[in-house]
Image 1 (tube, helix red, strand yellow):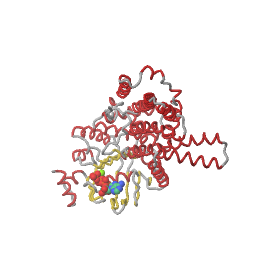
Image 2 (cartoon, rainbow over the protein chains, first blue to last red; image 1 turned 90 degrees about the vertical axis):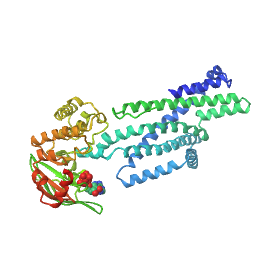
Image 3 (cartoon, rainbow over the protein chains, first blue to last red; image 1 turned 180 degrees about the vertical axis):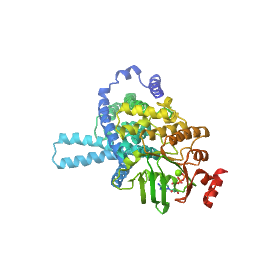
Image 4 (cartoon, chains in turn green, brown; image 1 turned 90 degrees about the horizontal axis):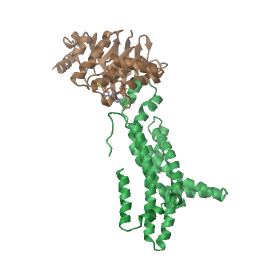
Length: 256
Length: 243
Ligand SMILES: Nc1ncnc2c1ncn2[C@@H]1O[C@H](COP(=O)(O)OP(=O)(O)OP(=O)(O)O)[C@@H](O)[C@H]1O
Ligand SMILES: [Mg+2]
């Protein structure tokens, strides 16, 4: 809530300073023309796939199976050490080279390589989320699984009814953080030609900039920021709502 | 009423030999107290009995069933032998009632209504009928331990193992928990209790075992062990804890 007020005050203050005319700015606030929906589409793909994969890998890293643990740790080490922009280009370029070599229809190549860039981001955030999930699972005290063992609940079931619900509750705040940073990472997709928020804004703003309309450029970027804020806000609020579902009376964590 | 018999149980963790050939009997309906210094292997022994740990050598019998037989499922063994821990180990994300219900639902496969009725009855039995919906973090240590006892009782075990059930409690809660345990003993539950509560041992225990260095050093009636111990090691330990 505080964040919303700050954001709005910031924008209004810029208006008061005469940076731009607020009424004009509001009149050109057009999500459909600034790639907002494309960003939403990409986010809607990255968040669930990144989380699903991150969850599985994080879990794999806590099992007794050495091979699973090893694969998980190689995955995490690799994807965490790469800057997301480099990953996007690797996927985009390798995909493009291979598909072209296979004489794929050029239209298809474009579509597939664009989405490969999205996949790169999903795999990247999955690595971070895997670490969060792993830490969550490991932070459930061993007494919990021991108690489940002692009443005869099988290992697998214990995972689902004891460990994961507790691990999930502990991991949610960190997952919310990672979600919001992966939303903002989608802005890197403009580099391979996505016409999402940043791509479109960059195009619009540089046209204004080159023709001397610096204020107009600024407005465009402010609006882009505003749209990112909306997406991030919705997602982090949703995570908070889920946190409330998993809240345990007597164990509430202080929140600002 | 059931009994436990351990014969020549050995267990090592790496180079550390923790149990060095333990013979132990808990007779039907008997309350056996186990006392001994820290690190002597008491917890390890209890964990071997319900197969939370697999012994390296030796046999453990529940009545005349060899639990150490590889064909026996550990999950089955743990349904027969309840366990209560020093740190309670209640499931922190579940209410008292749900703590008791969890294994009823997932192990005994009772429907929700039956599981709930059992949970209510068992929590009533330990004096917590008014705390059904409280979460562990909202309960005192003594209340948590009594929920843990109800959770073990709900599985209808033949034997219950207690590992220092009152060492993490304040004096007042200790009495509440010991009272529940004493009543269980009188009702004929077969129990093995690791404890340093002399009062409880004297009043409730049928037999006391002094355990040290991974072995049973001496056993006898509470009076024999606490007042007239034969072994020098038992005597010096008793002097320390009675002081
Ligand atoms: N899982 C394990 N791995 C390695 N060593 C262990 C393990 N469990 C117990 N030990 C060691 O075995 C020895 C006996 O431990 P145990 O917990 O059985 O003693 P105890 O008699 O219950 O002591 P206390 O009174 O402190 O509870 C200790 O030295 C302990 O460090
Ligand atoms: Mg112990």
